[in-house]
Image (cartoon, rainbow, N blue to C red; front, top):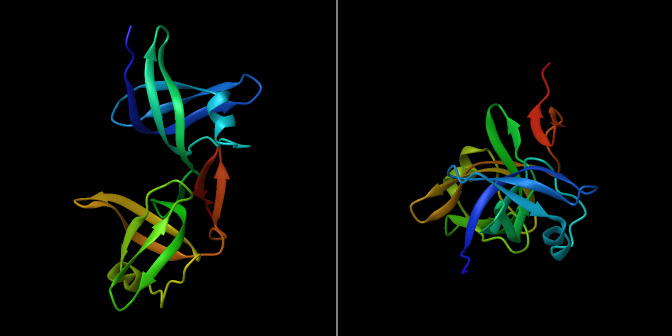
Amino acid sequence: MTTTVEAKRGVVKWFDFTKRYGFVTLDDDGGDAMLHLSCIRRMQLTEVPKGSIVEVEVEANEKGLAVKNLLTLQPPPIIVNGANYVLATVRWFDKTRGYGFVSLGAGTPDIFIHAETVKASSILDLKPDQPVLVVIEDGEKGRKVIHVKGSHSPPADVGIVNGVGHVTPP
C-alpha cells in the first residue's frame, strides 16, 4: 500500500506529554490529525501550546490522519481588539526601498512588510532582530503583514487563556 504525504497548515487542538500525543486541526476542513511525541522530539520542543499554528506533513493510516513530520510551530496568536497578532522578528527593513521582511522563527518563510503598513502603525522605523506583533494575511504574491505593533513584549492588557492570547476585559 502506497501512502501519500501532504504538507498542511493547522492549529494545535491539544497535546499531552503524559499521553505522548495530541491533535492538530488542519486548515480547509482537513479534519484532525494525531500528533505523536516523536514529532515533537525531532523538533527538540519542550512545549506545544494549544492554539499554536503549525505546518505539518500528514499521511493517512488505518486509524485516520497522522502527522508524519512537524515542520514549523508558531506560538498562539494574541488577540487585540479582535485582530490575531503573532510575535515576529524583523529580518530587515529599508525605508528607502519601502519594504522589508519579518520572520516567525527558524525554518519559516520570511513575510513581506510594506512601508505604508509601518507608517500607518505610527512606527518610525524597524530594526533587524526587533520583536514586533503582526497580523498576517495571504496576498497574491504570498504572505504579508497587514498590521504591525512595535513591541518588546505583548501589550499589558493581553493575557493567555487556554493557550490563546486575549485582551483582558476592564
